[in-house]
Image (cartoon, rainbow, N blue to C red):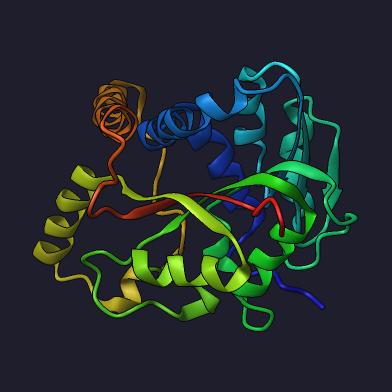
Length: 264
């Protein structure tokens, strides 16, 4: 059975590969990940990590910042895994996050970024989270990022695409059996600008649904200063989340750090 959304085309992955290297949003989201994950990865010397829905391998590359980290990437797309190979990654599996081809309790950490919103029904998002729980060792962590529907009105459902509120996402994690440690919105200030622009342009729900999950485009070199500015704004959000130990109340992204209970 195929669980893949129809929008993940070769051109999609080609653009994603370029974005991960230059776009300020991608840089800023990695800074937020570091704010939450640095204390965890410094707590031990070896981690076996699964990048569930690894895409073009940008986050797997980023995880090399942590010594002693062995990363396995899995994705449903051969095109995506081809880009991972271009990065020099070899521990790659062609498969679905909905049916992980790994034995129980085989990973210390699971990473899943911008994947959950694309999982089709059935099996659905809760079943996918349960798969992540299954392959985690007791006490292991899941770091997940997905899209929120803050300021966007009704939830978009085209092509089995989801957006979540924070309570909705927390409910999915509870159903799956995870203990949530942090759950914060992100991309907060840029989301306000995006909402204002959207309303000024009077964009329809159908227009918003186009190219779901990847509306970003690489900017010309002369405008890369915008990416630096955006990365700085998101770095300030990461500082707030880390230093204040508080969650952001709104934004177009949601980030959850959760654990498999020790007795789970």
